[in-house]
Image (cartoon, rainbow, N blue to C red; front, side, top):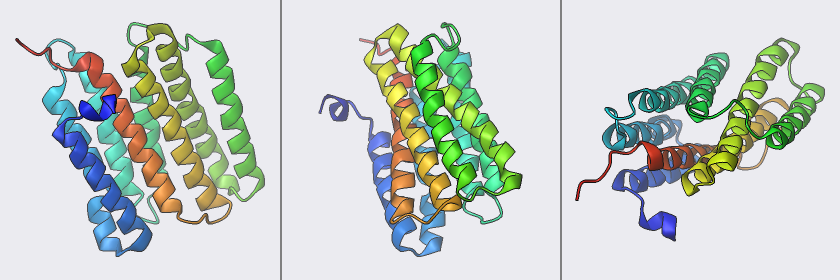
Length: 226
């Protein structure tokens, strides 16, 4: 309830568009899904552009905007059946932006137990994919992606352990939700179709981006004048 009380109108709009995109992805038609799917990320970009302190913290704001813009590109690429690799590359770069963002002012991977736990989970998911249908020509790209997203999540968790703030914990939960979303997507695509996969993939994905943006804006937003 505390979180909901502090949401910006653009965040409420993002949540509504996310629900509509999930519904359209599950029930159709595809045209509605293609129109609605990018809207939550566009609203995230608008929110960061409006509320972040671009003068006081220009570098951090740009990394966050870059991560969101690359995620938006990945969303669009994945709308096409032929755009999976392009989408994978866009999201890999987005995670790279998030890693740099979460590292600012902190050591690399400051919490080793979190790193080991995340890598273990990532290895289990990749091992399951590799032994249950992941094409040989996709193994290297997917392995690279798994390592990068695991690094992003580990950096976010380490940041939360160091900062001990609500915003940092929000970002860490967002990073973990991102891993859940991509794991469901990969299993649905390469192992076996999952019931209501689009709902679960998009739901955890939009939650991830929303939590990351909300958490980062706790430190990046423009100070309110009294």
